[in-house]
Image 1: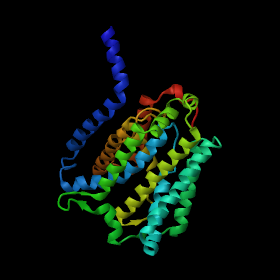
Image 2: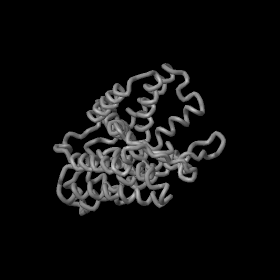
Image 3: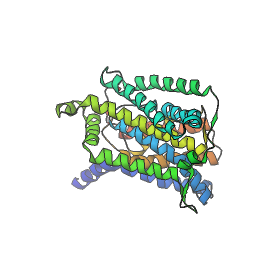
Image 4: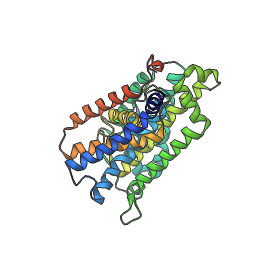
Length: 323
């Protein structure tokens, strides 16, 4: 009986690690069975990496917010706005558009954080509202038109292959570097421990002397920063910007984070797990696309996955209300 209890406790403790790893292995086998050419060539691997890299950066920013027990629905819109700022203003100001896009995005993150921390407005409401503002700004500055970015100096930040022969695009290295920075921040620094503390037990974090207001604002600014970098790199990758960027990416982003093992109730999981979640979701998306599954059906699948993983990982004692 003691062994059974120990085994059960071990399984419960490691469920969020075992599940995504098992899912990745099963998914890989299934996709190769359905299509033997899946990831069978260098070109197919590069294509998948292009689709995963900017997505991983955005998902890392979202993970910060979810770890804190909050939500950020503005990420796809902020990502789009950053890409559109590059598309519209790069021809006039050159690389100065990059700090401009980042500062505009940080302003959105600051507003989201202040509305939650100072005015106690639930984050799902504030970020939904600011997402519409970002969408509107992107529409206004672009006039609704697609913008072309053909300058090799700009596109090189995402599409330079390292090494030049049979290497990987530079956007991949940006993504891995930012993912690694996110891991260091969350697992090693006092700020990271504060994020976990707020997500795990808000009252306990307050009693421990954590500056809740400061941490919340910084977390949303970090989320916006990651979204901005993702948008800039994506604009360089596709050599332009258009109004469809980020559309319907909210569900896959949330699915990636929870599939990786970060609970929506906060305080559990981490950016170190998000990479695996992104791999699973992008593999699944690529595989379903290859066999001709309709995009709307894929969205249903991602939503169902997010619900299942949320039920499996959420701590119902800590999510009495939406934060």
